[in-house]
Length: 347
Image (cartoon, rainbow, N blue to C red; front, side, top):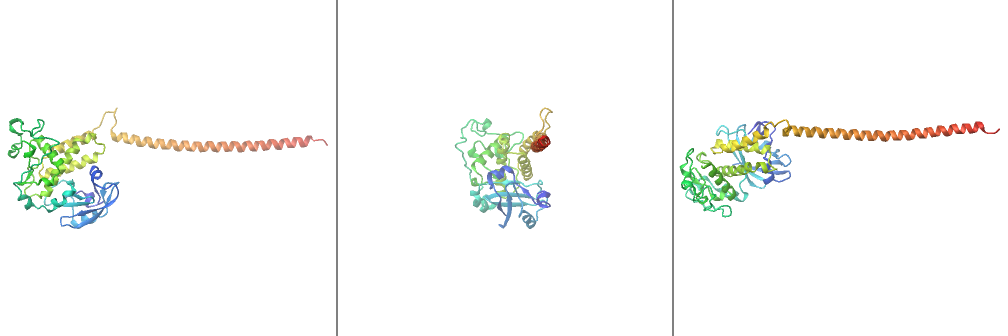
């Protein structure tokens, strides 16, 4: 949490792409449900993409301070489940971990599954297979049966648990010796996360702290997959913005502090931000300069229009003056002619 979130202003912005995909297009009341199940109404301003009225009360009620981490899990069209990690109990970056948008249809499974429930299923085999996207015998699969040396290995960062992963069928998401229930992560996100782990040749979540809330761990994994998709499609996605990159960076920094191996993703975001901020050559002004020039040109155009309008008014006024002067001259000529006729009239 930053000062603008919990000290002054009390405004909480929401990432633009998240608003476009998951929140209403108009102003509505959004409920924030705390870990005790208490709901708090807040005003969501669609045009500004953020929470305003009601957020102040939530901050005060829960004693949020600068440095605290707040996790928002979308559990309904207009409802967030909120988890709070105190700064004095857990180190985090000065921003929210992000909006963890697990499928709302899985709400009951997520909220009702306790750590003990997941612990008891540690031997549950995850057999998630996406038949339309890949097969176990696909030669292009990073985890295919024909992979070199019987599977992907990493000499630089050896991970014994990863050696056994040769196919997507064998891929298991294990946190604190417990296999995450396959129902908690949507298929497309698990597949994306599986490919991400394959690219890094390691389980990215292997260093998450012990006894971490399974819902939180699942949300972190799902959000990591979503951010990876956003980064890869960033140059070709018109809806993405500088704010999206900044939000992804904060989220990834927070995930790193939790123990996720996502430094490579954060570095990629840093590189994209650098390219956006890099000063181009004189022949190619920066985007900021171009925007300033467009604004200045618009102002100049407006002034020209105002002057043209004023000139048109002055021209009309001159025409009216010319007509009035012509009438006066005509009257004078008529008066002079009348005097001449009268003076020259016969006695």
